[in-house]
Amino acid sequence: MKVLTYSEARQNLSETMISVVNDCSPAIITRKNGESCVLMSLSDYESLQETAYLMRSPNNANRLMDSIAELRAGKGKAKELDLD
Image (cartoon, rainbow, N blue to C red; front, side, top):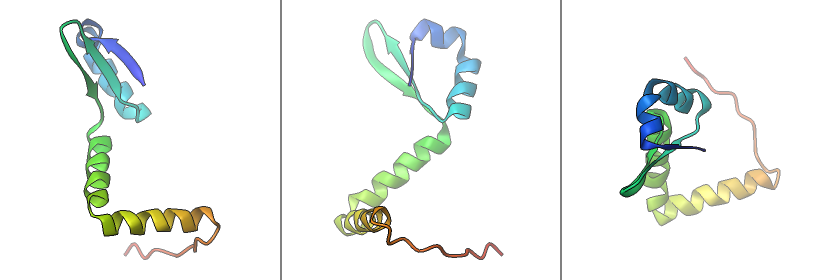
């Protein structure tokens, strides 16, 4: 994760935004007199929001964790998706 000062981020905002989106890697923007902030792509943010929403429900969280454990144990099954 790239770390930039507020001044660096301001001077290179366009390049920083392109890098954050293309690399799928957030940037931390530090400030002298305040809490640091994170710059991330909208798609990464939406993904985090969706994950947080799904994990809020204990039943969903347990189902997701069980599915991950099954996949890691080699019990996953490939399926064809009908995209039409």
